Length: 548
Image (tube, rainbow, N blue to C red):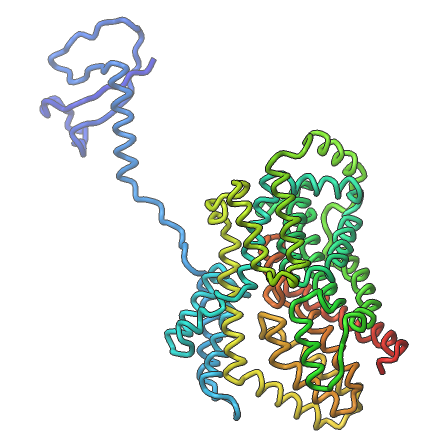
């Protein structure tokens, strides 16, 4: 048994000359004891004595604590912005700020463009979370007097960002009550033997609902995001634990990219589509009716709906492609869940009420965001979802912040005249090339399509550029009705480019399954595929039905 001895030098005369003087008056050493109960006799010539066991433990604890307190604390990791992306963001804005504005562009419009592009770079490189980057962009606008405070934060009163935030609250209730799992297991029991079959079942379901629910944000956030998240969780694909690619990444990206296709297929499938029809009537004095729109879009739309999920399945595949036992396991899970609980019934009834208001709300003068607020109010009053749980949805509030910020900056780029200058410049350039109407119109479509990187709303893009591009296309010999239809269709398809270009984008991106680089990269690839299908297959179909 080892005992701890405390030795104190009482008389330096007894210390050998060769023994160096101790640096401290107290030293610790271990001393072997051969007996357990031997009494220690005091030796007047010795300064050592044996401490009781309890005292030894207290002494060791005290010494250890003292040593720990004396040790320098570990340096705290940097929790601020990532410096390289932050410097790249700032450099983008500063360089563009001092570049002279082109002729026809006001200085304030150019300054706002520099802040807007710097914000986009920050959103791509992410020196901070997206909401923080957007807030810094708005703060810069106010600080430099480029926008007033009211103008910079004006889009927080826009219904679309709030509809998207409300969708995340709905998703919380959908999953919390277990209704999402119940529906997810039902889908898996029917189509879950393959990931591809599961994806196509969701794609076709969304396309069937598209003409009845005139808000892609409502369809994505209120119905399909909760369902898709539940399916991912049920299949063992979660955010943050390395299982995103198991199913969730492919399924989220597929549902998003096909939502812009279904929005382009029907006049009532996206809130901005009637605006395109109205501008067509005022520009070329021709009407695009509901049947006319659907007839022209149905063939290229169906082809896109079939091709895009399979293409993503090939180039961005889920880790789990087949699961023959999944339907059986899903049926067992359903049996184990038993009958629907009270909260599930309330959630289901609330969902039906909200969807009903989305479909028939125009007859009752109830818009999409009001319908969503009514539904959330029911969930809050009944306790299915609590306000504390809503506050604990960081993705909802983050998305609301950055999406509203981009909408505000894009809107004022239009108000300051930058978008009209860009449209006129493009029109003059293409018109002066002396090409056939087919080539000229193709160039116009590409410029119209890819300029959507500067817009956070399909309605804003249509309002700013649709009339000018339609007028020039008609003047260059493009059949006016064909030009109007094509521009109307691509006004939806271009929303697939970014995570902010259409209402469904921040909904599915906010789920967290797909990185920003992949979102933009695959968005660009699918945009090319959609253009080839709609201008190629669509062109043949439009010739067959007499559009040109």
